Image (cartoon, rainbow, N blue to C red):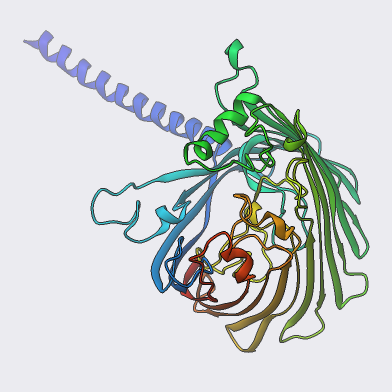
Amino acid sequence: MALEGQSHYATAKERKDNMKRLVLLATLLAFVFGMAASAHAVKVEASGAWAVEFLFSENFDMHKNGGTGDGQGDFNVYQRLRTQFDFIANENLRGVLATEIGSTAAEQRWGGDNYRFHDRFNGIKVRRAYVDFAIPGTKITNRIGYQNINLPAAVGGGSMILDDEVAGVVTAIPVIDELSVVAGYARLYDFDNNSDSGTQNSAFDAGVLILPVTLDGFKFAPFFMYGYAGNAAITDMANPYLAAGSTPQDLGYLVGLTGPAGFNTAGRNAYWGGTSFEMTYFDPIKVMADINYGKVVGNIDADDRSGWMFDLAVDYTGFDFMTPELFFAYTSGEDSDVTDGSERMPTLNARNWALGSFFFGGDTLLQGPKGYGSEQTGFWALGLSLKDISFLEKLSHTFTVMYAKGTNDKALIGNDFIWYGQTLTEEDHIVEVDLNTKYQLYEELCLTLDLGYINNGYDKDKWRAVDPNLDKGDAYKLSTGILYQF
């Protein structure tokens, strides 16, 4: 019994000692793991823009009776949630994931795909996903992944050629304080993983070079971009148009007009160049301008497409209660011969380019503008904006009046790449008046009210020769809602 008691006593002591060792080991492990966690900690920052818009509209398609599109006398509610997460390891390394709920009008509309009381689509889409890092010991930065590429633009809120998310690599190399070199590669589209010998031309690739220059009172950013879309990519991207029975005059706005032989699926070479320009040297006068040129070359004349654009805006920033702006824009238009290709500048996606806030886009929230698209190219516009008018704290207004007229030949009315209500010919014009109001309820939350009117100056007689039922109408909108930015 004594031996058994001694044995029991020793075991208890050993257990106590073992427990001390385990506590000490656990403490050391916690310390080590804590140090490791601190060394590899990632800071997460969230930002976003959540918008809800109540839209009353009439004659968005400029057609008074029985029109298409939003039609007349519509009331819709739209909602879009954009959220971005930055996973920051340090000042030289971060990962970015941005999501979007409601990327199209159908997905944004209450009662539509995302927001009906049954059979919800619940589509959460990846808007951006990339790694942003600097090469150690240098100021060279890189972004690799699905990211936004916006070619240089000073007027209109974004590039008229490319302002969209694409999969690619962008590298920025500072040369001197005044000059950097930005180079990028993007794969915009790939029909068939590019490994099958039968579809070696399935991809649409692009490369871009930008040279941002900053001087005392001056900024400009010359750029050049080249792209090639293979024949399989051209065919696949055009299929939805062909299935609908319409002419794909632009595949990503690269295809060009249909020639006498019909739609041609041969590959396309595309070239763009231009520069943005900003001058504040004569403060309080600020001058902004862009000039862009684009060309697409196919294997027949009807595939070719080339054109240019120029815009200019002059702001006076000397008032503390508003900023007056005079603006002008010109884009080349089609001539009367479709067999020699197109005279409009090829574009990819001008998601944010707009003058005013109705005909060309620019609505404060979501679906209140008609929205800029390639079919609108071929116009000149002149306007005046009184921006950020404010006499009361937290309350501001922007007033715009604009006249726009087409540069496309009237002989093309009736072709399926000249659209009534969107494309302006030399016989058509519009006058737009906007009054937009914003009240900052909180620092992150504002209430908005946009009022818009478009006087319809389309030539009814010429368009009625194509559509005898056409009854043109002026367009109106009242848009109100909330915007939460954090």
